[in-house]
Image (cartoon, rainbow, N blue to C red; front, side, top):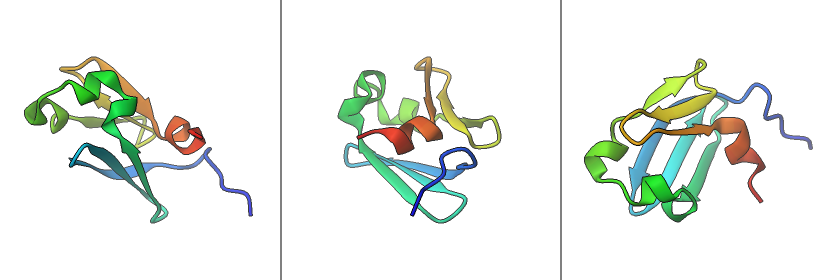
Length: 78
């Protein structure tokens, strides 16, 4: 079965215990260690909690950290 990254959109984000968790509109959850993202790994919990969606959930933006992550890129990580 082929999994599409073109229409994947995030509906929630949580950062806990050194892990980034992104819940997608279709019910999937992506988890990745914060260590993969140096700016996020070095940030305070307050800064990590200050995120917003970009492009109707196509990405996540941390203004204070100048960091953007796309959902499609998270799905493609191997």
